[in-house]
Length: 150
Image (cartoon, rainbow, N blue to C red; front, side, top):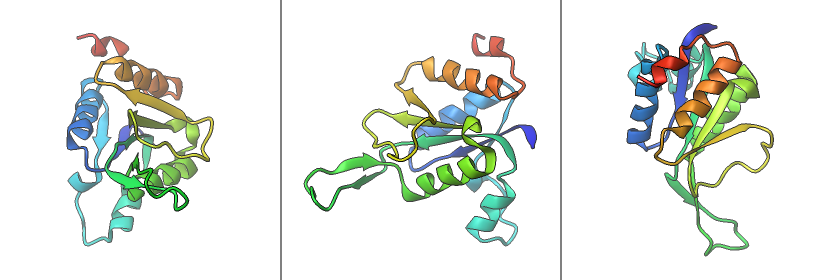
């Protein structure tokens, strides 16, 4: 694994995706955003697999879609896109839960069968940066926490 590569899984919230990418660059890490990588004639899943050799994944759970339980169709809940949930599971299997951080916006429905994973709230303050940096450091990703303060 390349200890500097961090995969960012995202939906339609481009502002949060860019904020996380700039944060990673500030602490000298290499954010991997799939649509920024070369296609090389690949299908999406081939391109995804080719770029998934990373040290850590940050999965952005943002309210891009709505869903409901058939028994309560009027109770629509904000949800992350289906591809985001699929890629969350992929990285659990590939990297292990310790190397995956789900960064979520308030109000988004969190996956129900995945207890014990790291969920970090994104509330518009910088607190999420320190929480994510701490987890990166805990799994051996080489970062200088002093760069967060500059």
